[in-house]
Structures are given as C-alpha cells and as structure tokens.
Image 1 (cartoon, rainbow over the protein chains, first blue to last red):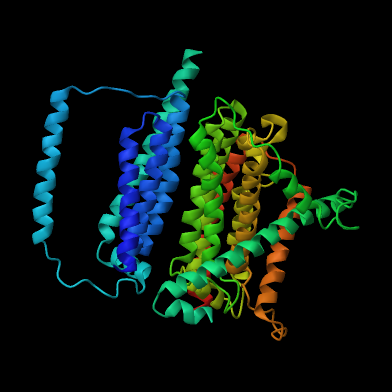
Image 2 (image 1 turned 180 degrees about the vertical axis):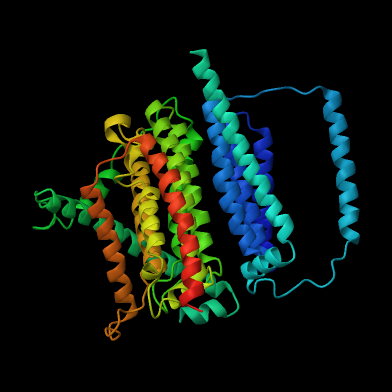
Length: 171
Length: 334
C-alpha cells in the first residue's frame, strides 16, 4: 500500500461521507457544511492526480465562493431551514434497484477499461501548460465563455435593478 | 537542507521531519502573536499619548499577553442553549486551520521554507477563503442577531475585497512569469515589484487590511453597532481561537506582502552582507508596524462606503494596474 493509495482512500471516504451526510441531514446549513468537506476532499484528489492548478481553483471557487453564496442565499431567505419528507416504499425499492444496476454496469465497465500508460510529467509547469493550451488551442471557446459570464453578470444587475424600480413605483 | 528534503523522494522520515518543523513554526507563530498583540497595544498607546500595558512583566509589560492567554484558558467555556452546538464547536477550528495552513506556502528565506509549490500564490488565496466559511458559520451557529450580522458583513467584505486583492497581484505574476513564491522573490533581485507596480502595491495593501478585518475595515466587529460581531457568544479559548486566527493572518499577510512586493529576503543595495532572513524580518516588521499605524490613525468606514470603495475604486484601479504593468513589461523589461 503506497502513500498515494492511503491518501486517495482518506480523501475518497471524506468526499463520499460528505455527500451522504449532505443528503441525509435535515438542516440546510449543515448540508452546505458537509458539502464543503466534499469539495475539499475532491480538491485533495486533484492534487494526488498532479493537477495542482485545478485543485487550487476548486478550493477557491467551490469551497470558497459558491459555498458562501449558497449560505447567503439560505440565511437571507429562511432562517429555520428544516426539510423532512418520507418516501413511499415503491420509490425506495425502485431507486435501490436502479442504483444496484448502475453499480454493476459501472463496475464491469471500469474493470475492462484501460487508459494506457499514465503520464509521468504532468506536474511539470502545470499552470503554464494550461495557460498555453487555453490561449492557443481553445481561444474561441474561452473568449465565448467570458462573454457568457459577462452576459450573466449584466443580466443579474438588470434583474436586481428592476426590483428596485418596482419597489419605488409601489411606494 | 530544506531544499534537499523537498526534492528527495518522500517517506515516513520526511513526514516526521516536516511534522517537527511545522510544530516549530507553530511555536514561532504563537510567540509572534503574543508579542504582536503587545506591540499593537504599545504602539497604539504611544500614538494616543498613554503608556499602554506596563504592569505585568516589568516596565514594558512583557508578560501582559501571557497573562491574558492564561486568563482565557481558565475562563468558563459557555455554549448558548439555543446555539447550533456542532457548528458552534466546529467554527473556530474551521476558521483557524486555514490561517496556519497558508503559512506552508510562504518562503521565509532562501533555505528556510516548507514547500516549493508551483501555485504558491494561488494556494494562499484559495485556502484563506475557507476561513470565511468558518466565520459565517460562527455567526450563524451562535443564534444571535448581532453575531449573524457580523458574520454576514465579514463574509461580504472578505469576498468583495478578495477580488481587488487577487487582481492587484496579476501585475506581479506578469513580471515574474510564475505563481511560485520563491521564483517571485528571485525575480526581485534587482528591483522590488513595489516600484514596478506601485498601483498594484497600494491596492494590495488596502485590500489586505480589509481581508484582515482590521480598522478602518473592522465592520464585522464594530463594537458600537454589533457588540462584538461574529464572536459575541464565544468565550474562553474558543474566543481566543478567533483572535489567534486574526493575528496569524496578520503574520501570513505581512509575510506575503513582503514576498510579493518588498523583495522577500533580497537585501537593499550595498547591504548584502546582512543575512537574508534578517532582511525578511525587517521588511515584515515594517508591514506589521504599518498595519498598526493605520489602525491608530483611521476612523471606521460605513458599511455602504466599504462596498462602494471595493467595487468602484479598488477594482477599476486594479484593472488599470494590469494594463500599466503590461505596458511597463513590454517597454522596459524585454
């Protein structure tokens, strides 16, 4: 058992435990906190795969920004966010069967999968290579994504602005 | 020695050595925190024409903070009945752990560093964001309106100021061509980046003070409006953890500013005979003093002014800094 394996098992267990806890908890805030641990564990798995840049961005965007926006949304809308619902037995049985079928298919699929020789020099100039790829091969998708984000930003401002005007008109 | 350790294949021995080194660093940082608090009180006292702590531990109050910590240790640990208990306990841990983790990326001198991350700068920024979650959690779990308001303000402020903070560093990244903090320091052998991107330096300094929640940006704990902010309900050692977080971040942020803009362990011209670690300590102390000085000088901002300042002043200036840095690099540093 190598150190990499141990690290992978700890991280994978944390990620899965975070996910399971997120589904099973009743308090919305607790769910988000469980989700933070899943995000962090996934960032750890990226590091074991020598993808340092992706790991740092994962922590920065998901564990940092997105979690806080979710927490803000929850705290500003409902303070006592509790959910409890019971499922009908048939639904439980059907989804259970679905999960088992999915597991069997995935298990055999992964067993037969061969990815060739793993790359050994991924960690060398990781960030630089991402930048070069992004700005040489994928310039147009990259720029289009930035335009899309800009449109979303302006759209959010327009929506927020309209609410203000309505309130003023209501007064 | 550390350079050899970092490049040789890993093993249990390495884990043990790094654990020991990490424990040493923790002790040094705790020592720094103890005396930074004393220094802060002394300097503020000097600026306000009063003596500051001068009873415990001799004429200069050298043991004042030690006594304060002892008091905090033996204080009753209260958890409000209506608080969300697991989150209330987890919050100080989640706030403090990242504060110490970011120190791993910072090189203190040529030989004294704990890692050689190719994404050192990004690592610092990413990890420090987790503290915000801890603070927001503390504010919510206390089940107290003041602490909730404080936590919200803190999160909003930290997120808004993180953006100019990150963008102001882009100039430095362009000059050095690397996110590795060691390489950034090495790129400043001839001239510190402070002089190459002064705009970036000013924006970085202002937003770092805001990230640290220090006066004039200490709205999350504005005593006159919020009692004490997100840690109203905390007492004893849990409260001490939040204070510790604040001062460890002061340590980390001052070290990061030194590395990014003041040239780290590079000596001032003609004074190269003084060892690098002393230069680092000098520049670092200068930044810490500056932070205390600002605290003694500036009044607190209003909440709306705070947000407007981040989005309407700092962000455009930081974007301008990217452009100016690119022009400087193309014209003078080819």
